[in-house]
Image (cartoon, rainbow, N blue to C red):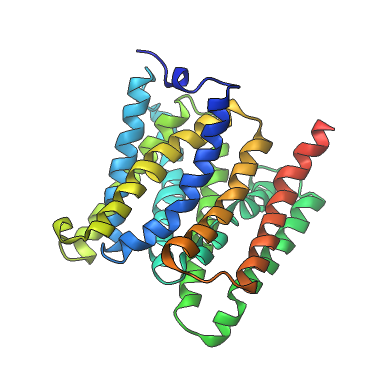
Length: 304
């Protein structure tokens, strides 16, 4: 069975397009997710996303000739990663994006690399450099600019913002947990198993917490939004991200990460009619600066 890498040659214009497509499709995910969640309960929505995404990734691994089994000794670490990367992230983002504008939600969500950088200093004993400290300060300032007035108002938006921040911290913890083991299984298989395993307790939660949901009642707009989320963020983007990590230097993948909040903010304005004001632009600038400080500057210094 031929490897999927043959379809995207390394170093070609196609590989550059893959990185651009990753940024665009993952960023545009947020308004489509908000549309789908306006009609589909969070737990059922996430159950479908995780099972379809995990199944799709396992199919990609099988088509690529990769072994889909995980070593028994790696299962505890895999379950820990599933707790943070899947259950924590997907539940918090599912509820969070339904309680606040999608453009703001994506900005908060992609503070994740900042928190992961700080956590890695303690868990992985990586040095807490000046760049990391500066990035943390910039990230906190960005969050304050975006959600500070909402906390004063004590409306529903602070709850959404707190959930999105929880999602970012959970994903950061999962990222650090994923770095610790010396995995023997391919990354695509590991991510696929995380999605499938995480889908089991979320499915149980859907059965217990929510009433049975009839997907035939979803409008055409909701179905189109759901199809987008399943096909692109949950399958294509998951595969494309880890494919990009193997094809590009880490600094270029970081550039892709920096573009996602930008695409998410402006696609939400275009699709949902959300306003992009001074607060959003200020927060976006500060958080992108935070991510650039901790991700891009070290890579540029090494290159020079």
